[in-house]
Length: 273
Ligand SMILES: *[C@@H]1O[C@H](CO)[C@@H](O)[C@H](O)[C@H]1NC(C)=O
Image (tube, rainbow, N blue to C red; front, side, top):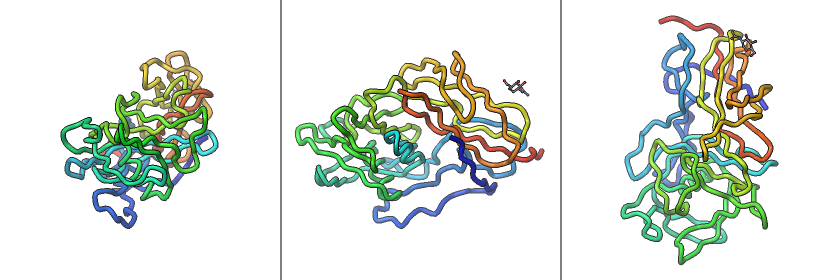
């Protein structure tokens, strides 16, 4: 599926954060189409999405992605500011969630479940989880309309790997990428597209991306991105569209967890400085 939306070139493209009842948490600034421009692009570029480190530790502004069930698709994918706090779920009640749970760390930090909590409050989806006092952590049971069943559960990965500790125990940093994945234990791969973004000139040539499994690092063939598929090396050749705009691609393959978004900004013409 290819989404197209208008892109605006401006210094500091930032959405106004929603009204905040917890000043430690807000959405944005999230780069528009994967990257923020301070001037009209003059040449093709590509790279990784980064979140501006605008918040002091122990809070973090970091990437969070939530991939729901097949019916729901991607629930959230953006930078989110979050920090140590108490969280409340309907099934689990209110408890601290700051990395010191079960003495996992000495000092409070930002953990996946507070990132989830911040995204939920600001985007308007709900989530639920049971709480285990012995483990001092939540077990996430549903996010938005993607609810666990007897065979499909939620899993948490950071930087492409399953976390060795729970969502209130594993501390993340600003450069980390957190992923909540529905039916995580059944997936044969966790698709990762590189680079995260590219900028190209309308109708001019191709952009090549590479898809791997974030867990093993191995190249992934047969992954669909828009109208093209990856080859045995995990490479897909995407023809640059003729119309300027922001094009978003998710890599998909039956049985695998859908990828991060690849953002392709297409400009009419590059303008030299
Ligand atoms: C773009 O890719 C197509 C298909 O692989 C190829 O035929 C074409 O020569 C490529 N164009 C450029 C400019 O590399």
